[in-house]
Figure 1 (cartoon, helix red, strand yellow):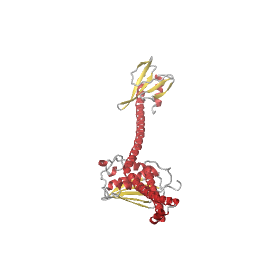
Figure 2 (cartoon, rainbow, N blue to C red; figure 1 turned 90 degrees about the vertical axis):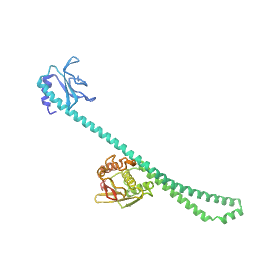
Figure 3 (cartoon, rainbow, N blue to C red; figure 1 turned 60 degrees about the horizontal axis):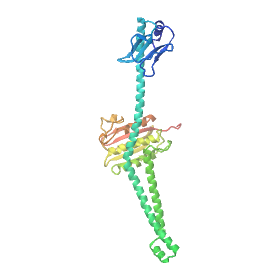
Figure 4 (cartoon, rainbow, N blue to C red; figure 1 turned 60 degrees about the vertical axis):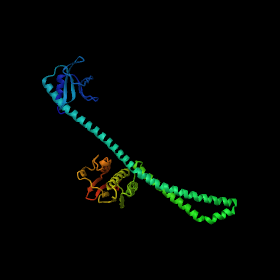
Length: 373
């Protein structure tokens, strides 16, 4: 403390003996104790000068504004002289300010930890919201290839049934049945139909597997992070979102070759998903969404634009703040764009918005991976 030198003669002249230190109670932090030897006092209330456990006590509250931060409790061998009390009063004021500042730091640290916890929770809520929105599209995308696969399986079953009859006729030596079947059934064409059914069915199952893989990425089940193709990731997200909004919204992607970026694949997937879903919802029936990917002077730039209703100019400066939404009446939470910014800025990127009369565009600028990285 700045008045430590002035406080030393107070301890010596007012109390004598060997004093250890002033201590802050680490429990409730309500008391500052001047200890004599190995016997510290711990009290929670301001007490008047008097006797405690047979020993004279001088207590001095430490105020910061209207709040008592602590009580300076001194075990006095004799009544304190006025000049000593003046020094102790100054010490109490300084001590109260220090305690107040410490509590402010602790409160801010606790608040920051709570905010980080809530931000993580909000990110999970946003992801669940995206899952719910895309579930109908997932059903459609799975239904079609599985329906096609079932149709080809029926074709294969019919062809195999006829081939089974031919086999039985050959094995039993029934020439008449074999002749009838041979006249009405072209074996070479049947084999071609079976091969085609096998190939088309396999293609449909691969398509279904791709849909499940893309949807799994939304749920957060990503492969190990590493180098990845940004263009392929954009195509993956568009492929995932399109069934939910097509044919009402026309989605177009133009992609140029780009270099690797510093942001994690899972984070960029979440950013693209939020921006493209927002654009499709804003475009509405008969609207258009344009997504482009390319390189600018400093890195990679991704733009997502739509020709729907423009953003209110009053909201535009706050658009990336949590809970600011243009879709409050339709269930918007105002979390998607805030999460995008929280994922982009830590890697040195930035996100911008531009609203014109008939077009709203979001631009994401991402730094590239250096040669050293």
